[in-house]
Length: 297
Image 1 (cartoon, helix red, strand yellow):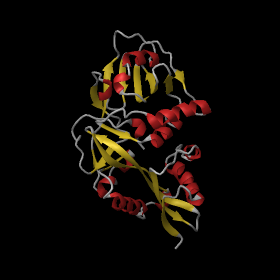
Image 2 (cartoon, rainbow, N blue to C red):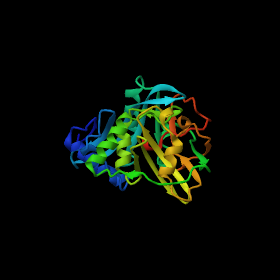
Image 3 (cartoon, one colour):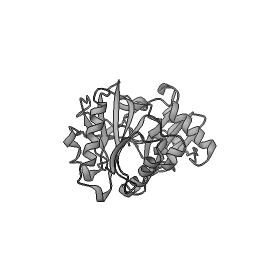
Image 4 (cartoon, helix red, strand yellow):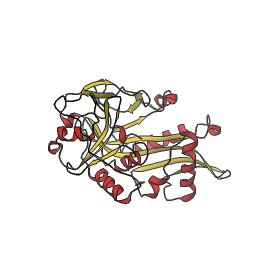
């Protein structure tokens, strides 16, 4: 048969190229090419696909990221699904279902929790495999009245080799931003996020030894992640905030659970564009939490 299932094809040029060509057809603008070229595709990122040899193209793909995760301060083994994609002309043939079932069976005895962030258009697909939606929160606080914004951070450029070296040193060695629901060893995902979606929002504070991914919109400082290599008790947040804040900032919004920062932040409804699904026991169901947005795939 010309159609076969292939997996873990990172080092197989024909299939890897098929993956690179498939994703932008399903998710316009999405690319993994530069991420691969920079050596960020490691063995924690596993790929499964249906490939048509006659047409020399990938018909469907499902990927997983293997990671250590934290849930309520307990370290567990996690599998995060991503890049669930099928060519429009190859849909309704059961390819994605076949790949999902294969992966779930393969990792059933090796993981404590399966989870994913879905495209809102396919939220009915994942419950077929035992996933259920769990509501996330964002966290928000007023900007401290005793701290005047004085923006002074250095913007890092992912295309500058010396800057990229700084970035990858931080992603490889940072402390988990949260242990309510967070990840360890997710540097490959952070590198992808910083190469693409957050590449213009990377601010370096060498004196504080921290990288902050952040932007300000209409007076709201959105902090997407903080990369810090020392203990969180050594981070002086009130020294960092003004250096990444613009005049007129009145609110701070954290896109992760900020318990490590010891701030008085209140939960609020999360972005409905990426509903969170989980399979397995999940201790935080009904509680406020946010998986770090830059560790999502």
